[in-house]
Length: 384
Image 1 (cartoon, helix red, strand yellow):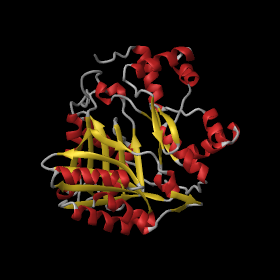
Image 2 (cartoon, rainbow, N blue to C red):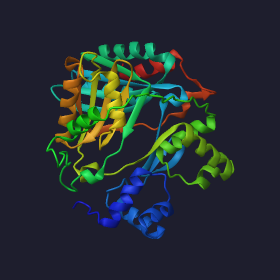
Image 3 (cartoon, helix red, strand yellow):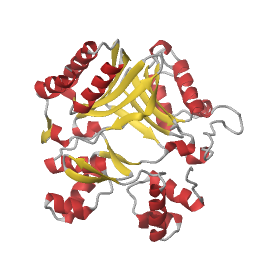
């Protein structure tokens, strides 16, 4: 039976979602409920599976508790670049299993997910040192060729932004309310028309500052990717540092490396059951060129969870929405980018995996392990 959110639960969830780093006391002040009530209701949401339940895992750091809150970091801030890779047309189950094993073995894998459409594909993200991009492309092409994959597509992006769901536009237990009440137009078209009417000069002045991590920073980043609510006392005891010192490390990471806290919940509760990744190429001949597309998505953000990655010519858009609005987004991009370059993929949620930050890649002082054996030969051995 699906868990039912009442009005108090809804208010707590909204605030918790927007800022998962908030304390029960902080949420309570906003929603005007006692911290004990906030805690009890959040525990109840976890118990019923609406929020991810706590689970003990055996990690390379030791036994850890995985919670409903994790930290999402910026690769660019620590000298990495995110490679988006599509292994297109995997020939058989054996090759798929080996490709998954390869992703599990590779030290720089960030994410992977299965795609089932006219063939079986695999989408993966690798956060790699910038100076290893050529080696990674060559290596992944060799992996694809060895396993009989028809094509391997790459997009490497140092720029990205994200948006949050607007739960006021969701009919609970039903579907996304994706039409504008006044015009009966689909929401993304309504947003586009509004953008065209109110377009302002755009200056993307976002610059990523590089942060020099210590080895303790790298380990703490892994801790936060497992459980962003890990108790300060536990970290103090584990790393033999005072709570005040650990707190300063965490504060600097959140200021310089962590993009946001992520609350893990059951998206299907809101009808958000279509996880989609779209590869595309900007068009210089469309009414919506690359610069305008970036400006549109960044200033008129979609009312759903989305990550938009881009470079000068290419983009990758990840969204989770209802099937209907996912189709509208794909159609909109098909009309306003290079249609023949648009590659729309629906990921199979049970076969997706987000990897914890792997601190052992990091040596020290902005230095990463780029040894060819480490990046190429050792992971390749798992598929031979």
